[in-house]
Length: 184
Image (cartoon, rainbow, N blue to C red):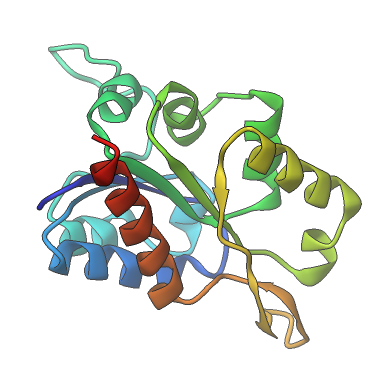
């Protein structure tokens, strides 16, 4: 069964893993729409995601269109599930604070479907008490968190903060979609 999945991508070196997540989800027959923050676009271009997903990539809240459609709302209403991977400390802080100032955060605020967040950042940032408190708040609000792994970080150090494996992310997505289907 095909599902409509929104994949949000924020500015982290781990964006390359998000390309693999999209590829896996598409191979399973899902329709994937990617929303990229401006910082994410500095690591991987929208063309990469568009080629892999065979769908338009959303990069801006405001698009020129003859038929105005608040895309973030329409996407949110059609989605079976939303995931943000990688999710930066900045993105997590915005969502916890209710800040919706770009296409991705507006879509998160508009969705009524399960939202999975997979953090990825330097261990110093991930272990910061503010970030940890924000993650606890997200869990309390019903967001599903895929904890980062320990491993080599972009600084060369070994620590916790590395984006979870593609296999783990895809497995959690499948599990949430199965739960949702079973509850219908």
